[in-house]
Length: 226
Image (tube, rainbow, N blue to C red; front, top):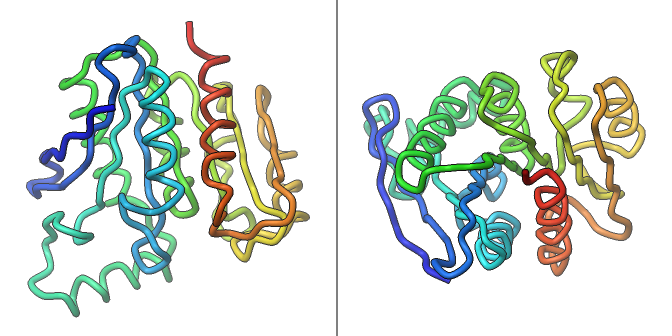
């Protein structure tokens, strides 16, 4: 597997990412990986995100994981660390994903223009799950998406009301982001086709469960590859 550190433009800022692929297996289908909120372990080196990037790349997909603006070495419009912290704290408190969606859309444009794409998929984790879903609803090129630890009960997900794309929801039974009751209620109000997979005996961070999650997502995307 090859991993390339890359830079791309988003809203006048230079963001960083890691492009992963196996040049002997690439088919070409691509997957964009959206990380969690940076105040909750959210960067492109998150354990769940890196596992997804590796497993999917080893099985024929080109993947791009990236850092939102102000995270890691990605540029920001704030002038110092304290302002960046306050910026992301405001996003967390106000549930405002707009800049993150711009960054994700720019990352996807870079992925498509760099690799070319047959099938386009997106997956996101926690805050990144909301970003991935909002991006997928608005982008007609995205074929299907997976959402890990979707914060049901906190975010309004009515934007999915008319979405007929295949959807995979992976959640933990002991997740602070959403109770099993909130998860089941949220998924019940979403159109088919959809799959809900509640993982037992794990929490929001999925320690030692990363490969299991990655293989679930791999299987789902394989089922939706034309």
